[in-house]
Image (cartoon, rainbow, N blue to C red; front, side, top):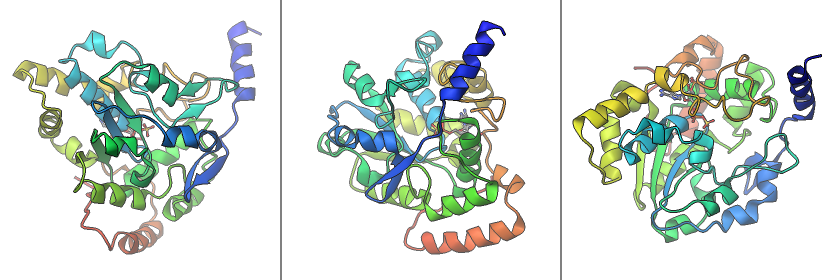
Length: 307
Ligand code: PPS
């Protein structure tokens, strides 16, 4: 057997799907829970920028846009390494014994300022130093149904995520908030509330799809950064779904080799609004809507599920 095939096989054998535990009722991987004290005591710096999202809301997209703004659309600089390493994912932890180890905390601590960091934590679990230091935070939200579909496919292709079960089972788990990083409903509502009292720019995936130029300008204003017209055009061009899908430093083909299986479902899957219609049955949709109404009755937050 060819050596690369043997390595592939041995890697697959050691890849196990994450076990979960909880922090204050929020489902996280056991590995994250085991380092929770360190995450909670993370020392934010005043010039840190935090990109916060529920999983699959367009984190990577936001990260690429921010990086392009910060580097005046210098493509070479933005390709210095993969998204995963450019912006430490603060709570993410894979022990040294794992096929691919990672410590967002170590990466962040070693990084010179100004840092841009990533988190999927719900607002109540964000390390307090971010609030103490009054850090700027960009929160990107995406409608529940498209987030769910994207999350389901991500569980299928990423062999260290918990087993998603069947589509039907995953829909139930998502509605119950029993998926990694907890309830989508509590996440988007919690951050929505927090934006009134903190330096949070709350954005929507759907708006970004509809009018990326406008949303990118909002981000630039928030970052107090002005760029030439041509630079803005470059940012727009290089952060389209099509461009990012072919960018190895943004499409996750450089990380998690043997763990993420892009042949099952690529990380850069479809990048559209409304793909949920291809997955929800009529009955599922009715049930989901009814439950959604109840869970979202106490917020002014409104999402679009189609454009
Ligand atoms: S993660 O793993 O939580 O960090 O994933 P995240 O980056 O938040 O979300 C991945 C989804 O975002 C889509 N994506 C984009 N959509 C439009 N334009 C651009 N440039 C873009 N980049 C990433 C990606 O395709 C995933 O969504 P789905 O619906 O699965 O395609």
